[in-house]
Image (cartoon, rainbow, N blue to C red; front, side):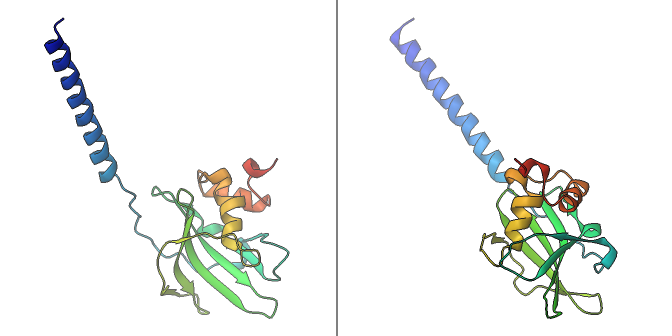
Length: 171
């Protein structure tokens, strides 16, 4: 084969590779993550609250309403979080967690009458593992995103809460 033919084949091969990479990058860009539309759940019910451990550094008690847990096609675990303070205070939020990006979002805050108020800061934020106030890190690490992987469905998430942690995290 002549040097000219080899050079032409190499050039054609490089052009074909560049075309495949351009198609891949274009395909990758067009498949960026898209969040599903979110429906607000019913107010939490006492009988469906599942407690979970956060740390010894807090006296607050933490619960997820098991009836509100969902795992969306968009890769978001959604749930109602209830935090009870020893003095009697109660904080209720409807939230989402993305295991893939280690982020969380508060969609709405619960009112005393059971209705919802849209969260003022309705954006995705990175989950931090702060010592005292680590309830989101606990949900991420121990229940909803074992070893960084999202639970397959709501039943798996509920079971992890009932068992005190996801079985994939137990050594």
